[in-house]
Length: 225
Image (tube, rainbow, N blue to C red; front, side, top):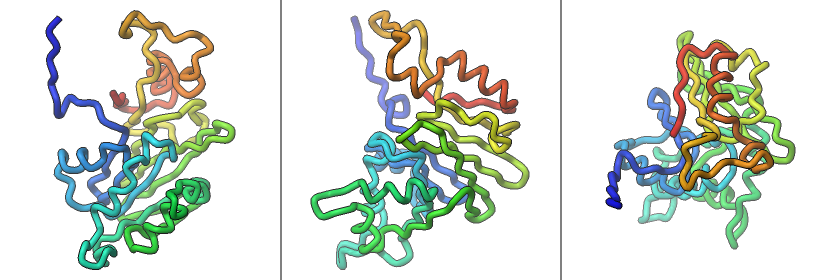
């Protein structure tokens, strides 16, 4: 069997997105530095997390790499990043620790980030961001609705079950960006997800995801790989 390595841009990296209008980065997976360099993103004004699982924030240290002045070991004053967080995530962020204590405390003390917690929605620039929690018991994940100049995008990349489709904010979006869910066939080694598989508690099947897009009447659906 011949193996072909395609590399960038076909290589699979962690979940993140960038809103160019407001220089807003969403999530920092382990590969975030590679992603930013590959996309030639030179400026980040805002950072937002969907949830605090490692695959979405393992690369949080990028805020230091982006803002640090090595001559003083503090941030360039004009480069600090505004960390906007739903209050529920803001409370839990201090649980991310190093041997020196909460990581966020160090980043704030050095001037790398400035936290701005919010309740349900926040406006940055010309964009309104609404945070909608996914009810998953003890775990917290958020779907975000971005609205600007009469257009609406719903961003739902991970851990979105049960999807809050009854919320008017997610209905009739111009664009729904969503994870594909579980593929029921065609998987490597002919694997089939058992009915009691843990992934079924957080993911829909691909068919269910497509049906969801129809039910909330999204104009277009972009399914993430």
